[in-house]
Image (tube, rainbow, N blue to C red; front, side, top):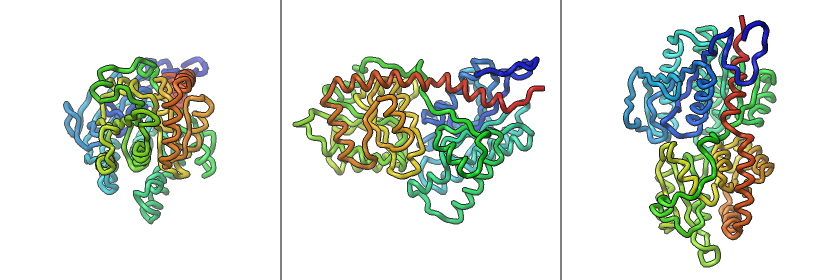
Length: 428
């Protein structure tokens, strides 16, 4: 804006021209995980508002490590998605499993993205997003070379989360990664955290509060909204006539989904009627979960579905009577808010929450679900049985979730983050 006028929320212009945003992320559609969805839905709003958005990413391959049909892992390829210029660079591609190989994947993207970012002709601000921070390293380097503001979007406390899931113990390597982590926090012009807990953690570590903003995850309310159960899916997946509890998302070490299988094994159909546990998605632990379900003799009680396209996911949400949101029982995960919570709320699906901390406060304040102790199959079984037996309670939680989701509308949240980005660019 010119003439000394202050930029309002969602202002996508600077000095009378469109704000130019360079965004680095190693996950982007057609991938459907939480980082890809957040970046795409924010960038789409920014572009529609008038900003010029360029995303540097890699060939879509998460989580299997196999490049999606229609793409190749090439040095450079360009496309346009929803008004966003997308540049895909070469990376070492591997499945989302195995610490050493994933580090090679992250490092290769860091180098490729840094080179591609420095070569971009014009941009006003560069953003790097986690969970892993090597992408933020590339964004910091691009900002330093080109003398542009660097914004760190903090989605995870990495590498602490590596230790929390037992993938790596405290060591010199972890200490080295932590030094890089805090270097990035100090060098960032602004840090956009997805939780208040992350923000407080950084403040406690000496990062000025003035550098920190919180823009939570949310849901695209134009895509996720209550709808009747999809009859075709009910029939094809064998869900008709059953209470359907589901988990939609990555099947990783952090999620401890064996708890869900153990709860399903304890379900008594004679008392509570038929149960179907629907697990949709992929991840490092999925083969082990399939094998465990087989060994436990769960048969048709547990239904596994591979990752589905984003345009289809609402159909799978529709068939759920309850959504299970679950993470390992560890203090670190009390600071996170799984994004599937907001999609479940928007769809009007009651939440069974196996996560403590900040996310439990949201569930209690919105009255959209029932909490249970993480990694406790008996506790999960109890809330599933309670919900299955009480149709009025299901309706009450559903309606509360839809009301609560309005406070986490992705479009509004994108406007808040755009305001943060705009604030890093000085007017001339």
